[in-house]
Length: 235
Image (cartoon, rainbow, N blue to C red):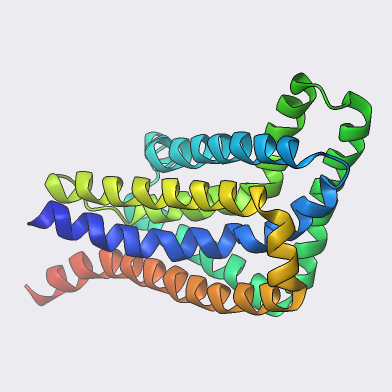
């Protein structure tokens, strides 16, 4: 069935792309350092809220991002080409200078550490830092949002295949959000078992996969532009 095939394909496309850009295991290493003064119960509560907020940010980007751009007159082909280039650029940056991304994430999380000292340990303080900056921009920043919009641009035009695509991508988003929650809640064990060196190797492997996905999205957009021109020329 077209819907089931589209759902499976979009799930297998979105899952590695989102895992590459979010890198829950690498983020857990920084999360453990930032929340070091918290109790285990408070870190678990923070991880749960970050997982929920991250899912909300990604789902809004998936379901509405491409639609909003189309509202401003941006064609699907242009969106695919630009989105694929953005994804490829993000992946290349992760491959070439992963230390730069780690430093930026650490800087984003540092503001959470400062705010953590100011607001104390009450639940309101947890809510305050869980969304900003631990969810946005630390976990799901502009790079994640641009990747999701680019993935949404590769959806089929209409019909059951389109809904299957959105269903598969939505499931991938929920899986990634759940992995963020689990990795952050188990941050202490992640630090002990993986370590920074292995997390960096895993990040580079997933970044290469993300580069291939970005290239494929761009090629799809270029094909959308060239096919009508070649068909008209052949008449």
